[in-house]
Image 1 (cartoon, rainbow, N blue to C red):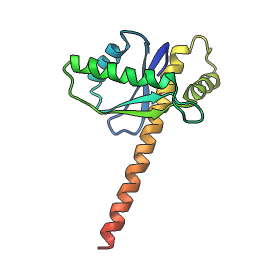
Image 2 (cartoon, rainbow, N blue to C red; image 1 turned 180 degrees about the vertical axis):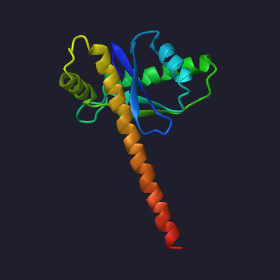
Image 3 (cartoon, rainbow, N blue to C red; image 1 turned 135 degrees about the horizontal axis):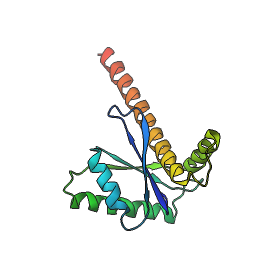
Length: 150
């Protein structure tokens, strides 16, 4: 969740692969634009990057991310969208990872600023999807283990 730009990513219907979508300018219209994207892509869940410090502490940016989530919820309500869950995910170092990926691809960092935010959003979402997948696999294994002991 950037103070200048907000990267937006989405996943496939199977929740396996995150993809970059758009970079939205932060500001008074950002929540409306992201709400429009959520409705257009029929999102069933929203993952918002939480900009904690390297020590895992909150900052002013964390407060801004929570305020953005509130504004986004209001924007979705105003559109008549059905309620969907919002989740917060750690976004530490995702911009660094995005800049490295951009540099590795040979693209100019100045020209790629908007792309950096999309790459960072994709990294946040992909990490969340991978964590979710591992959790579900672990739950499935636990359930099978319980079933075989009955």
